[in-house]
Length: 78
Image (cartoon, rainbow, N blue to C red; front, side, top):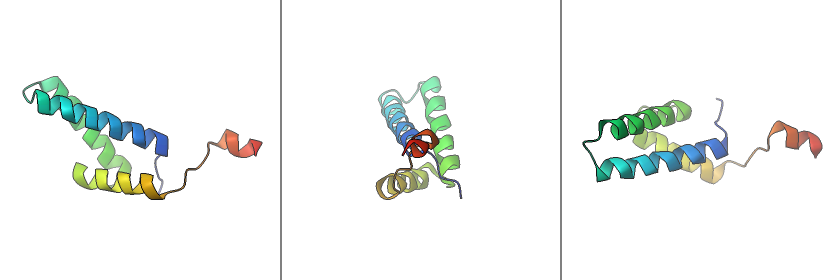
């Protein structure tokens, strides 16, 4: 299974949480809800899970346990 880049995944989780707070503050804003749903879908696809709750748990676990893999350019220089 291909795993997402840890820095991109962490940024996606941060964006999801920001938009989650925006929607909680104004639950009737359709644009904010749509953005949150888009981020939830992306998390689900990246983590191979059916629900955003499962995807967040999986992402947090992956970020906490998987060693960081340096980009290809950095690996060549080492």
